Length: 401
Ligand SMILES: NC(=O)c1ccc[n+]([C@@H]2O[C@H](COP(=O)([O-])OP(=O)(O)OC[C@H]3O[C@@H](n4cnc5c(N)ncnc54)[C@H](O)[C@@H]3O)[C@@H](O)[C@H]2O)c1
Image 1 (cartoon, protein in one colour):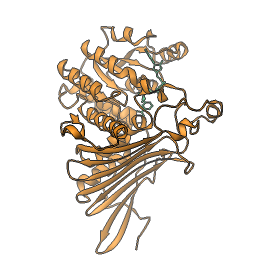
Image 2 (image 1 turned 90 degrees about the horizontal axis):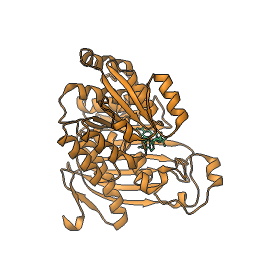
Image 3 (image 1 turned 30 degrees about the vertical axis):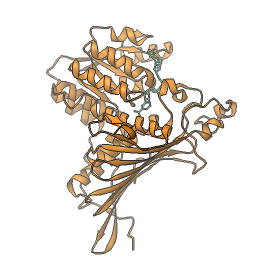
Image 4 (image 1 turned 45 degrees about the vertical axis):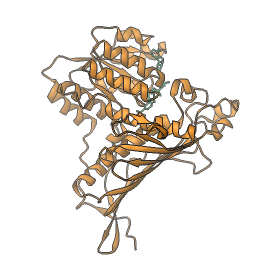
């Protein structure tokens, strides 16, 4: 018999995720006595969220912006009193005064900008995905190590209160050995621009998988306590995009030519992890299915289960914990509300890492593993076989292993 929903206050630990302001205040403790950290933001789309987040932190100043849209550049410059405004990223990276380069450009530019910035002695905060492929990502991590600088990626989803709560529940209460997980992000009609850089393989490195996959994979590995993925078997499909279906913007869909779509709109994979567990992973931008969008992570443990289900960025009632009490199935509904501000929190954590001076755990190595896993999925789909990854992230083709 299943009992649900139960709103419970104990023994489930309360969510302790601080608001963006609290994170900022905490960061300030470590920063107040030091010289201001001077930041340059490249890219004015999601980059404008970076500008707001950095500007909101004590001891941090955004002193330069780069982006190709002159009106947006001027607008943001006026709003945040930034006077160094550039069309090209190279001019921003060349500024001696910049300590941190924040990258929010199309994926193709993450690698060259990060390498140039690290070589110039700057710390780098980079949007997901870290890079187009494993080789680029490894070069970026090697460069962060060689130049002794911080390289971090904007894995903001793990900062959601429900994800943080689930992690803390696993640490304090436990659900036994987790033997299988299911993780997905699915949309009915969510291709972000049928003719934008997002669907240009040279600029994006892929489609739905490289766009939405990094967030789901990061949250999953964070919840599982950072096991390594050692093998993947994946398939990809682009049927709906090729047929001109599935654009986020319906008007664009009606106007679009069919046939020009070269990336996947759906990827499905099975992962084997180094702790012996498995993961069913599915990401899709489009599908003839329910008219909604949802992110879902289910963890199946020997003593209990956890399900995070977030339809359309819902901010409450997203978490269930399943246990068995003396033979009776028990469903727990923790009272967790998501307050947004996850970019602000991930940026505050980045600033704290820079301020700490202890950078060995902040060289982009976690992001490298995520890139290696997604890259292996693409190769598995291309060759139609399982691809193995060595534990340290240096993957080999199955036939070479
Ligand atoms: N973490 C998240 O939740 C999240 C959300 C959205 C996007 N993203 C990531 O952020 C990145 C940017 O996505 P977006 O949606 O903001 O894209 P976008 O197309 O809206 O913005 C890209 C920006 O890059 C600028 N740019 C392009 N070429 C440039 C150059 N040579 N020099 C300087 N600026 C240049 C453009 O002018 C534009 O301002 C992508 O990697 C994407 O995956 C992450």
